Length: 223
Image (cartoon, rainbow, N blue to C red):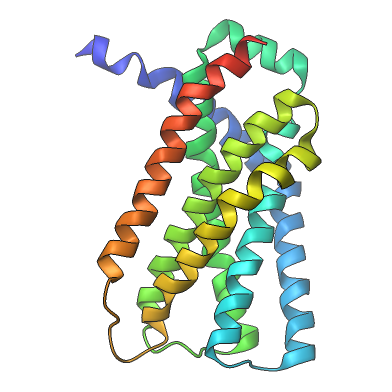
């Protein structure tokens, strides 16, 4: 039983470290929250309460920008000396899995907060609000996995902004289109066909990102 728990311990320790740093510093969280609130307020002044398709498109674009600002910085704030220290106390897979777990939790919270601000300022055009809450959380976690993967590669390549833009476009655009299609269920009274299949495709994409991250990051770590 003890042998089975050993591989999990470094992951939880590194996850706790990231969580404690976020709680103590909080500048990233409140900075992103201020960015989201101000952007939504500007949208309200410019558009009032948009109809369903526009509201939905704006929400997912906001989720994308939140992920770029919140999740992608997780590797950029880790200095070379700190990464070398982590290399001596934990394995590459433990480190990257802790980052995936922490960023998923961060986007879980940011998705709920951004959705609350959207509903407060831009109205509620949904017909199934509870379903959209679940879809927005699922989408936020999916985006966090992609950008954690991209941030890990970009941080080691020393070309963070340009590389993330180049790598992120072919990965994020199909995911956003899929999330936009899935979230249609919350705006229509009739359930669309193929919804289960689209959710399974999204889950398969998330699983592929996790597997690729676990396989590729150890090679970057060695550099």
